[in-house]
Length: 179
Image (tube, rainbow, N blue to C red):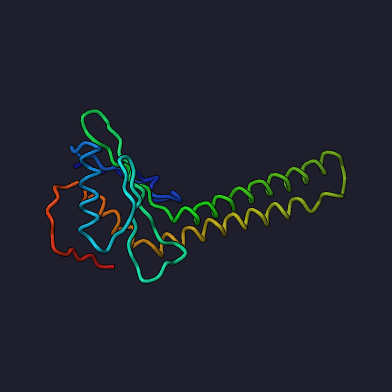
């Protein structure tokens, strides 16, 4: 088993990794289902090509990390790509905010620039507003990074789970993971 991680993964909004195994995608899917059923600390949905797994906790927080696993055949091995992220609802909300901030920034900076070109004082507020929107975008990014830091221990458990799921499966009574 080989694991790949690049330095860019540390700065991404959705960190990712790649694991190689000698199991076929179908064999890995069956093994992952058995592995998930044997460990009561984790839950998720698994199908033939992808899986979504999360750590069961007493309370759902704003940033509850989910691990999306996708299997692909590469040469003679199977590559398992793991991507960490929040629930799809939270992810959609953050992408919506980034989209809104981007559109507003373009509108305000364009109004300011056009006001300069036509020598009009009507749009002088465009530059300060574009800076406010940039600050809002940075605050949104910082909120996402804060959530990642808050869910780091669960992300480590999920990564360990993904790597262990590629190893030969031996049913154990209970597996203890610490949070």
